[in-house]
Length: 113
Length: 114
Image 1 (cartoon, each protein chain N blue to C red):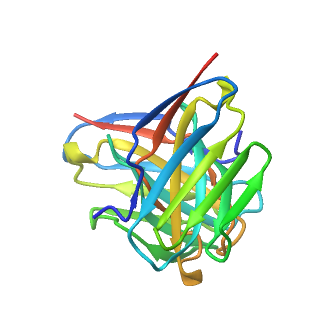
Image 2: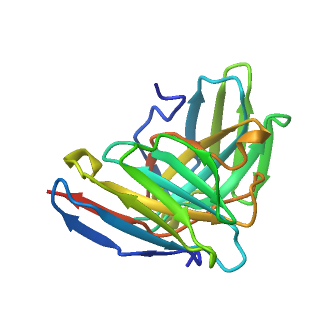
């Protein structure tokens, strides 16, 4: 158990809909990261938050947004969903922003039908 | 454009033998490399890392080798155990300003046969 909690584990929705994925980092971790793993793809970095502030941005679509709340949990919002958004979405956390190992949650499997 | 590539999607090895996983990168600005292991239905877990100032790092049964001139790194697992059966991801970080922003390879699935 990494200590990172992601909910829900599975999500099935239709095209055009909007969903919210939730992540609770390990106790004491201030950084939260979101990664997307599509079929036959490696993990793609989406976005990082540190102590409530956006820290780094990767290949995140404009239809996607994220935030980190004062209690340090984070939410990833995906809107106007398309079939291609079907993927495994991982959240990870670390203490700070320097080079240190990330602790990953078990992911949310999103299926867009 | 994949900057980190793992060209072998799968690897099968006998228990007790050596597993060698390879990873190539194209961006010479990468200066920190990591390996993560992933079991089904779980998130990746950190295995071992290496800075570009080194060419080898060892941790128990796991050794990572870095060849900067060839832009190549490898992970050696000796001896391989059935519990090592998992997907292994190579990842790279570009510069200290990138913090923990990881660029991952596509993964190599390892099967260790008893």
